[in-house]
Each structure stands twice: as C-alpha cells, then as structure tokens.
Length: 106
Image (cartoon, rainbow, N blue to C red; front, top):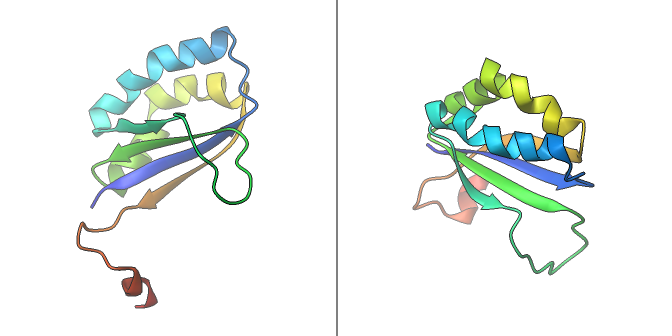
C-alpha cells in the first residue's frame, strides 16, 4: 500500500542551499520509487491558518519511504533543507482505493 512523506515547511530561505537541495532531491527519490504529488502549489485555506507550504511525496510503501529518508544520499542533503527552513515531516500510510471513512473505527 502506498505511503506518503508529508512536510509542512515554513520560513524557507530560498538561498543557494535550498536551490542545491531542490537540484539534488529527485535523484534521492528515484531508487525508492518516490515522486512528488504536491509541491507547494496554490492553496485555499478553508479553516484555520496554514502558514507555509505542503509537500507530499508518494512511495510504493512505508518501507521504501523510510529507506529513502534514512538513505545516505538523502542524509547528505537533509541539512540543506533543515538548516534553512522550519518544518514538520512525517511518513503516513495511504488507504486502499475502496476505503470508507467508517473503517477507521475498526
């Protein structure tokens, strides 16, 4: 089942370090089947506030997502983002295409 790396980034300093991070991240995703499905696009905040941007990367499964995050290639560039932005990051499992909301109750 697909898993997703989700980041909420704020206060991104678009200097040379972030540019380098953006230039290099795609190559770190490829071996793990990762691909961007949301990358800070236009948004309509309907409730609350949402400072910053959301990034969602899809992986074939949780194992590939964790292997990407822990990989030497990603660890090599992680500080380029983390030291030049504020943010939160998580990996979360997706649901099957036929998922119904009531199923979360067990």
